[in-house]
Image: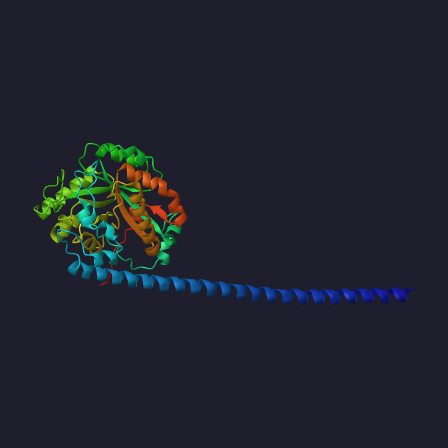
Length: 385
């Protein structure tokens, strides 16, 4: 009996040792399988991510090429097709840049009279560009992404639309409606107007972006410009002083766009003096594009000043549906190019159109942003001596 028990115990010990050995082998095999699986997953994810980055970079390069070609076409068009006659603008040039033929001067109605009697007649300048100045650095530049503040990362990959509302500073009936509008528009404030200071205070309370709406000389000498205007008969020192004074009057402005100015923005000497004030500042410039001969946006870009160009005046017509049509055009441009910018005014039909279009912006996947989010500067290449 004793020997039998010993024999049985010996078998049990041997079986346990064998089971332990098998378990060790299983664990070792499992580790190998897990390591192989992890490496395989990492490799597949890396390949997919690399492919996506390469695809996006290729798209970015193609976009740069298209934009560069568009700039070249614009320069050619400005030299040949963009000479306005007293009747209208060349149809082929308008079609090239996406401007509706219905906006030809010969078909434009009388200017809106309720609030624009002192404004420049924008019917003379309907050939607005369908592009902004190109951004040379890649959207996937990690250094740029790292420096982004919270909430900005997603905007780099979503179509962005900036709306600038001009002519703040007067006692407009629609002003309070715009102040209550839950849209991050940029307010362009005129200096030295009766409501300038009060308007700035209210805009700040709403957290809205403010820029200086700088009065500049129009082609029509009969149009009243207003106090502090930049005119072509001023010398460089006088221009710089007026710009500095206007910036002080619109305290807190982060940028500038031109009010009227079809003549002044077409004069390189005038714009050179204006942009001298931008040196060592974080100001950006928006070319309102009130004339096809404007050199303002191009000069700002060449000097490395963050800039963008107006692509559509929203409210040339006193009609909500036409304003909405212009906003639809901007949505298409934003989805095609990644961003777009348009200019409206403190008018009831503009306010109503924006309210009615809010669901449409969301449906189209377009993010409304302040103008500072769509301006771009020419890259500055630093050299080491």
